[in-house]
Length: 265
Image (cartoon, rainbow, N blue to C red; front, side, top):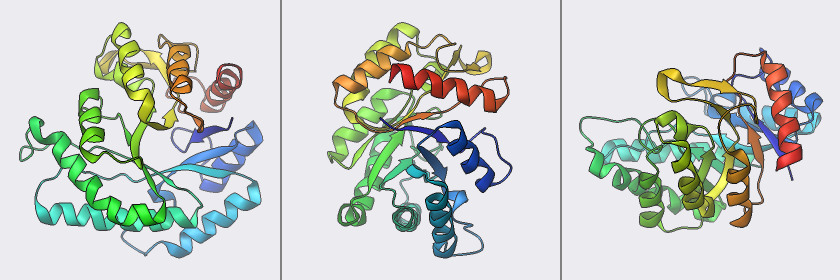
């Protein structure tokens, strides 16, 4: 198995410092965010992506996923086109990084997109993106993040509407709980989502919303062993990617997470 770390809340003031920390600590791969390889206001991104690719190669790490930071909760045709065109650029940059998984957001709530049309909006954008993603072999892992896709039936509706092996889930093990779902409900959610998992954020903690407190893996209230079991039984063989949001020193926190994953994943 491969063990990864997200470039978020991690040691290192620069990308190179973060990558060196990841390698020295024992991680095999990293999830990068699009801002690591593309300054959207200043450049098309190819040169920067090539530089990042070479840096990764020199250090000896692969990219498990590239976070797109998109917003697919849109219905207006011009807004949809902008999101789709932007995602095409993100996918081309991911190819330079030898990465074929895009971690996508659902998006943010908007007055003009009622809740009953959330899944329709997200699915429509993804269907448009498949036109270029299929020839590229690119996959989209829809994250359970924020207040839309943490309502997991929305994720399931998106998967049903798109109906493509190239569209699945990024399973964040803590976020459903952060949203407010009970610990008991998480068992059902993990089972429902597991067949679609393409990437993971292994994360632990206590509580929901303003009471949420992050912890190292195995030190919170999440039944991580059950989440891992559900994914493995569904055939998941991808990277186990750590995300740490605790109050302890992040270097220590991420080392603890890696130790837990090596024993339990």
